[in-house]
Amino acid sequence: MGKILITGVAGLLGSRLADWIIDNTNYDVVGIDDLSGGYSENINKKVKFYKFNLKDLDALEGVFKKENISIVYHFAAYAAEGLSPFIRKYNYENNLITSSNLITCSIEYSVERFIFASSMAVYGDKYKPPFNENLKQAPTDPYGVAKYAVEMDLEIAFKQHGLNYTIIRPHNFYGINQNIWDKYRNVLGIWMYQILNGTNPTIFGDGLQVRAFSYVDDAMIPLWNASQNSKCIGEIINLGGIKEYTIKEACDILVNVTGLNIKPVYLEQRHETKYAWSTWEKSVEMLDFKHKVDLDEGLTKMWKWAKNQPNRDRFIWPKYELSKGLYDYWKN
Ligand SMILES: NC(=O)c1ccc[n+]([C@@H]2O[C@H](COP(=O)([O-])OP(=O)(O)OC[C@H]3O[C@@H](n4cnc5c(N)ncnc54)[C@H](O)[C@@H]3O)[C@@H](O)[C@H]2O)c1
Image 1: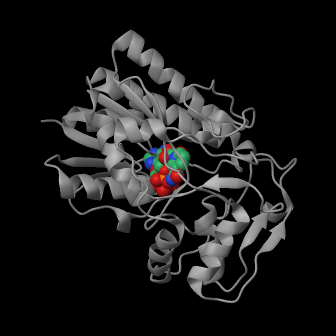
Image 2: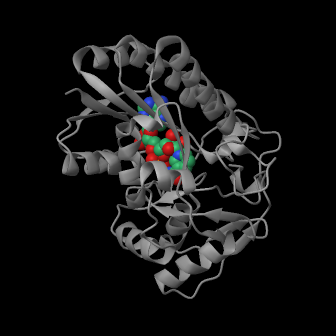
Image 3: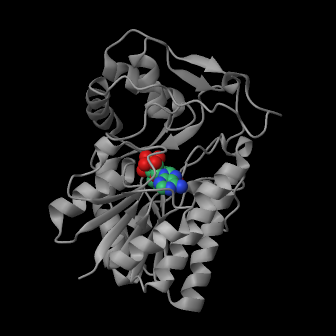
């Protein structure tokens, strides 16, 4: 039996999936992360951990040569969608070049299954939600373009080299081990950081943007099934988000969970898709997805965890690649 490689093993989905696999299967888990967005404390002690940036093809080949990898879960990325137009080079190097390195090694070392965490960002703002998997990709920002390009590269790797892939498009998973110190991503985590640090939660625009949220634990069995069910080979499957909320409603639920008497502060609207949620029927049918944890219950768990986290410095880009059009609230 080969081993399972998880990239982004210090992040939310990667660390929690490593825990789940170690607790529920006989597989050995190998993990890679450069700790640019995740924390070593999140990594299960039983994971054979390699710390490096996936841009380093030689280091990556070394891991494939040494470990007998049969399944790859590719989660490593910098998922700051709204920031991606201002860090284009970083975005493509970090999210696309890295993925092509991983695909190269997976072909070379005959990996049996490659599971890629894409994003709902590939749907863009062209379609009326809910977005279903048959819609043609139409991303509206560099983050979504990189995800789309990796999806295309996987299709080519499958046709030309027989790499068995499955594309999962997760939809706003949140929970313990999520990065709450990065001000550019993870709306629920950003609010938790703000509240913990005595400031009011901020909302871009009018707060009527609609999103669906899912607790990370609900992703585990579906992610596992994605690599085990041969019917998933070559498939694209949305994951999560059975119930939609406006951003304002989600903020009210969090404030209620904290028990504090605070109100959100409204900021300049940013370039983003206003209404975005996806279909989930395919994930129920193919991956046995079940929405078990409601937003108030999941936020209660995450808030309890967040209150016990170390007081880390907030991540702020020292220099953006592009300053034109940068929103006031991100200017240094
Ligand atoms: N959480 C969600 O709801 C969601 C939604 C859509 C898509 N996704 C995708 O799923 C994946 C995992 O999401 P997450 O929420 O766990 O993110 P995360 O930021 O918590 O984890 C990503 C991990 O990848 C690592 N990483 C980033 N770039 C790297 C590089 N070049 N080399 C090595 N390691 C690197 C980071 O240090 C981090 O630990 C991402 O690809 C993301 O785009 C997640």
